[in-house]
Length: 367
Image (cartoon, rainbow, N blue to C red; front, side, top):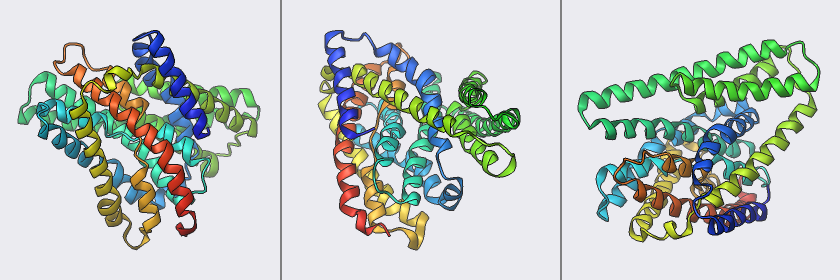
């Protein structure tokens, strides 16, 4: 999806929100988490290069796991310094730690980016979404239950178990779907099988309190690996085109609904807290790009790659959905939503303008 189309859809959504305030806010959260996210996660994971993913696992895991923790702490500290209560600051820090895979994938697929760099950035966006959802639920549970050392350890253990169970469920589901489609050479069964698999894996994992995002990502990557290596499964070209069209339609809906969920008045209602959060995000991206990533990549860390990683930090639909999904009884819910709105609006616009220019400027330095 070209840049102008992304911005146009967001602007159209914002126009609808101005005419009908609050009309799409609840629908956006539910639709993002349970309608659009499963196919978008599957399509992005399906198109990842598994070999490249294995070769670049160190920077990917580093950005997705310690990277989320560092971003949460830096953003939380920045907001705490402007007198935001610490629990609110930490929770908002977690919510805005998720880089938006939808915007990143939409930009990177139209730009001359090396496969390895594209895999790192897209995988970071996919995996840190999953990590952020787990962290969000753990922090929220701790806030609602009251902090205690034993309780926090229990919540952390449960969160790790949910991640592991989600990954195992996704890999198992991929194997079953691959077996079911093994002798199917027609388009319709393959389309239905992959689509149903994406939704059933996500919703099934969520139903048993596992990580639906990790499950769906694992499902997409594992099914691709089975298709290529272990099972004689030939996915028809029409199925590939089906997923391209479906992802484009889902992207369009998400960008429109993102604009429709963005209450512009709310985006400017907590200016000090919003500026502190944006400052924290900028500092965190510097730390991740120029300190954490080189440690993970060693001599393979090219300066041009690090510059792209630094600017590829848009926040988007998932952050908005998580903020809107906060319980109404939470004392600082409005503050969290207002700051998240401001962060998403600012980072989406900045990334849409800066990332393509940065890639074009550095294109000759990637090799």
